[in-house]
Image 1 (cartoon, rainbow, N blue to C red):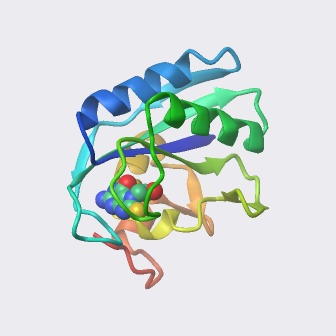
Image 2: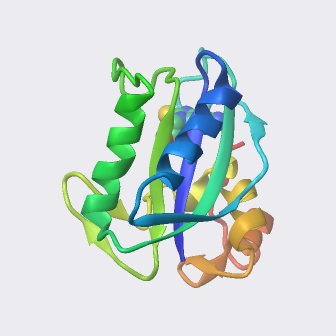
Amino acid sequence: MILLGLGSNLGDREQYIAAAVRLLAACPSLTVCQTSALYETEPVGVKEQPAFLNAVISIKTTLEPEALLEQCLAVEARLGRVRKERWGPRNIDIDLLLYENRICNSPRLSLPHPRLAERKFVLIPLAEVAGDIPVFEGKTAKELLTGQGDDNKVTY
Ligand SMILES: Nc1nc2nc(S)n(CCO)c2c(=O)[nH]1
């Protein structure tokens, strides 16, 4: 399974996320399989910023992880993403969360996403799209959300 996290907290958030999904689906080497609902979430990290809309989509692609990352960055740029402060507001954010069972720790790409298991704004939409898939240390999103069997801290 390949999962992307989408987020927006600037401008017409819903439109930006919808446009990002549309642009990704328009890529010849990529198929969007499932899209979660949109969730309004409190900012994690820098709290003094607008609330986010978050979603998770599952895709199929012939692109390798690094090429998929390039494609996501190109869609962000196409939608006018301006990277100011690292943890600040953004009109669109596309994160690679999971690429099958690939492990990647390069300067540009970490797979699975390093904060996947601690972010409720990821886990809730992820559970909707891939509820039964182990996504972190053999645990599913549902198990991570309920904290079954571990004390990992989920940030709200
Ligand atoms: N709720 C919420 N908080 C966030 N903080 C950062 S940074 N981001 C951007 C994630 O890469 C988010 C987000 O997407 N949602």
